[in-house]
Image 1 (cartoon, rainbow, N blue to C red):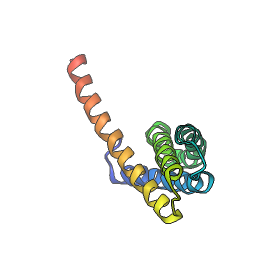
Image 2: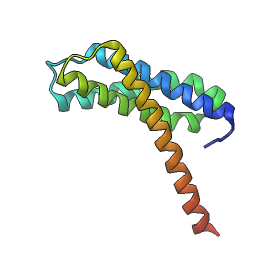
Image 3: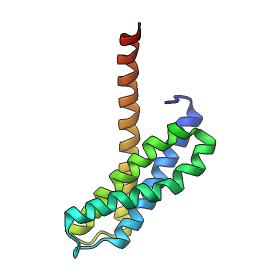
Image 4: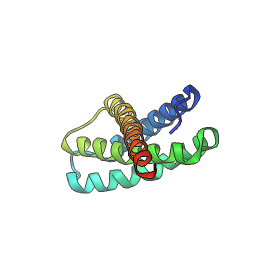
Length: 127
């Protein structure tokens, strides 16, 4: 993954936007009448589909794989977290969007850490 500020900011922006979009739609669709497990599965699927609408335009500016992997993961995680929260009790739109932002930043951080770990191990295996 890139470490130049332009690309890091682009990754952050893409993940936050995807998290916000998926969270808002998830809080509007799911409610306490949903079974938590079913809501999680549908939330993950909806998150994957909605995050594509963020990933494709951002990929033109910041690279396809660099954006697609964290954004799709953000969509899945946010969809699962917000839909399960909404299945437990009503979730306000502002709270859902905040959860989406946190999921986006957390997922991006996890992707950067995993990438650094894998690259470090790969250099030991190939040298």
